[in-house]
Length: 399
Image 1: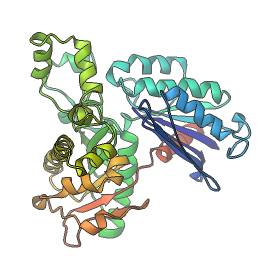
Image 2: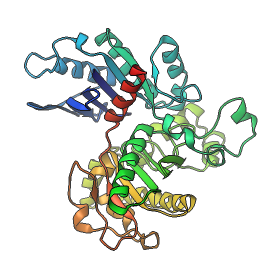
Image 3: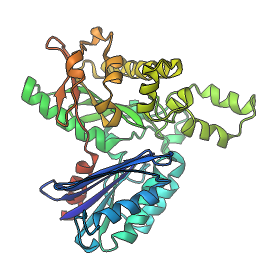
């Protein structure tokens, strides 16, 4: 079964064409920096690697470009869209309506649209991907895999807010959690690695997903028990354009004293804050380059970013009552040795000791970057949300 996986992020599209159940990746690639002055496109098959710098203004244009490449006379891997039996879509917010993978219907799309306000940087892009894919791959089954599903195991003591009870029972206001496909994929790989290398049968791990969006999950024996993102994908860690944790009083002060509208505050916290608000840049590669050249704002922003991650490592170590491993994943987690170094410095109390030379090694495989004496494993595990989505799509369609 040939399945196209579309993973539309807030500023990127990752895609793979996968032959299931063999998990054979026929084609893969991504477009990043969507909406910026220049975007990077990659397209990789067994015989071809194509890269291009161009302007991709929005997700619709990006998805149309990907479809053109898949069917291109010279570098394409399919002759007709009828070869594609299913398209799996990552959808960020499933709210209380979706706790499992589902076949996409008009009703499902309507519910995804109703959740736009809870994930304004993601659900609109996810739905756009679905609409374009329905046009391009019209004979394929369209399937949605929700980021929130993995976090359904978070216990009530962690997912309930300290607000009037009816807001949970009647309005379903609670911690939902996000990046679930990524946290599930890397945690399962980490658990297998720990069982093989340490003979541990139980596990207490923290997965750290760092990209334009960022989140951390406390995972005990394979189950999510706490997570930094909540009702929407906005709080917790400092992100590319999102503020992460902020005192609610700031919002009331902005509105009641400084005269901001609620819409303006929402836009500020979602699209103008985070690393962008601190530095003028949303892409970490730009921020690190400027920090190395002495930009004090960029240096401080990186230190703040790492500090916030360290606070949650401490918090989740307490929740787990121990710590076997921390896992860095996603674009920044996998590639930024600088961020990993900042996070792992002065963490001796938690048994975290970074090996500086191992930290600089790049690899597509699972790797340890801790010292031999480190009580806690520090793992870098490349995420593959697309494979995880393909597995869930294939399982749904066969059962």
